[in-house]
Length: 280
Ligand SMILES: Nc1ncnc2c1ncn2[C@@H]1O[C@H](COP(=O)(O)OP(=O)(O)OP(=O)(O)O)[C@@H](O)[C@H]1O
Ligand SMILES: CC(C)(CO)[C@@H](O)C(=O)[O-]
Ligand code: BAL
Image (tube, rainbow, N blue to C red):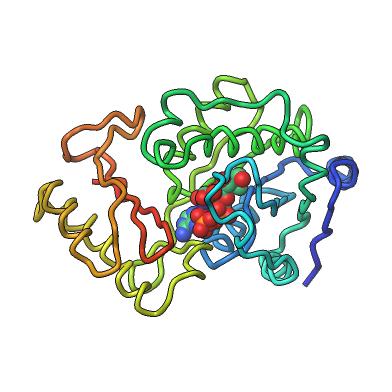
């Protein structure tokens, strides 16, 4: 098994990437993450491995996308363990920059704004979150851009459905030369969507968190109305609903539940905020 090359600066990253392209790599897959990798991440890294000659995974806990009362300081950081998992997937390059490397001089003067689509749902509870996520991914697209003649793909999980849609919009709006590859949600055997923040859950929390996926399925099956589904989530001990809506998957406009819509939910399970979604 070959160890990935870990680059901590933009220059190192570009040098390593350019060298591999000069050696003949004709496709590059970029998978942006915040680390604390779980099996869902590793599945995505494997998909990127199958589809590209060169695979780059970025690991960066991006301060710009955290609100002042969110978990930036406590977010799990475990780079050595992450690199070991990525080595098993055959990842070539890991880009793990410091905050100073990504944002020399502090908060960037020029940044990406996510508009109306970034101010609803996740954006309503986490103001500025998507501006931060788009800004860092915009930089990553520039940093890992392999240049003309080389296919460039970027991988995003459907768990973060609103983020995925916004990334697609940014690529269209900024004419980024990259193909966005959506990856289906990876779940535990019990149905819980895998998430780095699941590390915060107690055993009881993890059991109560199953109400999210269970309720999405009941809604999709027509066994519950939206109101009943919201009530079912709020009845679960220790769980407090943020939102449960059905939306048009292309616009995020709220619509009645019907085939072709996407049910999206977010809830606090104890102190931990989780999200999930299901296509109806
Ligand atoms: N269970 C999953 N299934 C599919 N994609 C996932 C899953 N978990 C994470 N991803 C995707 O991996 C990428 C990196 O996500 P991130 O590093 O934030 O992990 P996370 O598990 O979503 O963490 P968090 O708990 O902070 O939400 C995102 O595109 C995200 O959608
Ligand atoms: C895309 C991303 C890595 C940007 O920081 C983050 O929002 C995430 O992990 O989904
Ligand atoms: N998984 C999306 C990144 C975040 O929650 O900040």
